[in-house]
Each structure stands twice: as structure tokens, then as C-alpha cells.
Length: 208
Image (tube, rainbow, N blue to C red):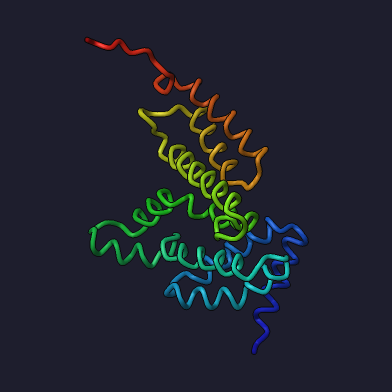
């Protein structure tokens, strides 16, 4: 009734223009900000009213738009500095809320990236042919695993900075819905494995 939704749309268009990726980033930030201090259903409804029309205007489907907003409405509960869920967990764990929130964001960093993947390829939302859905899900799972390895910096041992960066970049490329990106990601993983001594294949003597 106050026209706030239109003002949000004008703000996104003013900052992002016709660049869909930049508009998605701004919409994600707005959804997180709107979700701070509110339950997930309320945050989703408010974000859907204010940010949803903007994403629909960029030719994204209703399913993609609502799932994108829902993801970040959920993630707003653990995103610093408010992090309502972290305050609830701190009373149980007897720990500082900010430390819990930052640790949760680090562990769930891939959750902030997956929504962008299904906005550009809706196979993750079970839309399309079986081959497309299967390939998208497989590459996304591999990408999430590689990103987790890069964030933790560990796979069969501690990783150096260069291999760690390679695994992280490869994870992002695996999640990207493009075959050239997957091919480049495979190359990066191979280089990261070669650069990490404890990940190379070794010959083992079989004792009889």
C-alpha cells in the first residue's frame, strides 16, 4: 500500500541495470537484511513481496524466484551480525553468538552459492529432461564437495594455499551450468592434485 515494493525494484534496477547477476546479488543481500530478526516464514513473505517482482522482471520463473528468496530468507537466521539462530544456539552451547554465527556461515558457505546455480540452470529444481537434471545434480554435488574442501583446507591432510584456491575455483565452475566451465574445473582439480604431494597416487607393495 505504501509503494515500498516499487521502490525496492527501482533501487535494484538503479544499481544493477540489466545485469542479472548483479541484480541477484543485490536481491540476496536485501533478502538477508529483511530476514534479520524475523522468523523464516515472515522473512520469506516480506522478501517475496519486495524483491520477487524485480527477479520476475528479469525473466526468471516463479519457481526460481521463490526458491532463491527462500534460501536467503533461511540463511538470514544465521548471518551475522543479528543471527537469531546463533543466539538461540549460544544458550544451548554456552558459547558466544557471533562465533557460532561466523562458524555456521563458514560451514554453510556453499548454501550461499547454490541458489545462483539454479537461477541459471533450473535442473537442480527438477525442471527439464532427465539427462539435464542428472548432469546438473552430479556436477553440483561435486562442486559443493570441492568448495567444502577449499573452505576447510583439508583433504587427506592440510592443503597449501594454491591447491586450496584451485579446489575452490573448480568448485565454483562445477556448480556453474556450463560444460566449458566443467572442463576447466577438471583441469584445475588435476593441477591442484599434482601440486599437493599427499594427494598423488603412490605405489603400494602388497604383502603376501
